[in-house]
Length: 259
Image (cartoon, rainbow, N blue to C red; front, side, top):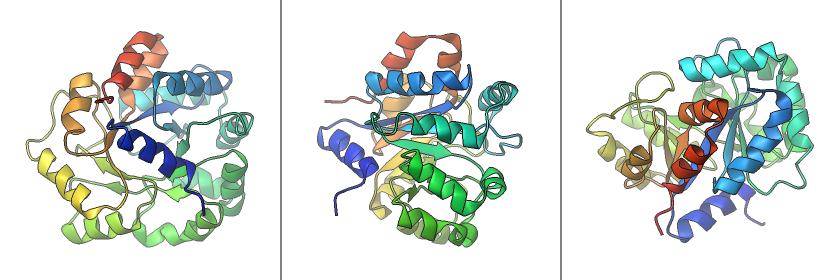
């Protein structure tokens, strides 16, 4: 069986001696008609994959920047169904893997089977659901597996060793290593023992480990990727897109290129 697009993308980057860079964008911030253009731009910058956030009224994992972007998108009438329909338009011409980040409520509202089917039609490669605990993920793991959509798990700094062990065994595509205690958003510094935490995750995990939450500068990217396979950058990318600071985005993505 051929490798999934997400696995191929990581393998290509890491084999080349670089690190993975996954930017997060809020679907519909600036209008849903901008979504495919934003994806195309980030792909041209050298992103490994793109995390597409779905606007939601109760985004418990998100800080002020992403919450504000979600509010702007919802004011534009953006919905989960609308995002998946928009992504479907470029399914056959899009090379870069797409990971959708949403919460369990919108999935329930659409219906789990319909949601997974629509993700498949839209060419979605992975899914992140921050408020879905391991104990409940059986609600959709079979459906996702049938459509070859990776369920990407998050490992928190506060997780117990037993919990981390279970998460690293189950995660698909990559492991999302949360680097702060709290919500998303730019940070000036990280905990001093974060390096050891990332190293420990790498030792346990069969798939790439990417650090996310709080990553906002080229220095952060270089610091964190010393100990893991790449980064996810959200709030800073959302801010820069909103401000139309495209060259700063290019420079941030380039920080993951080590070779």
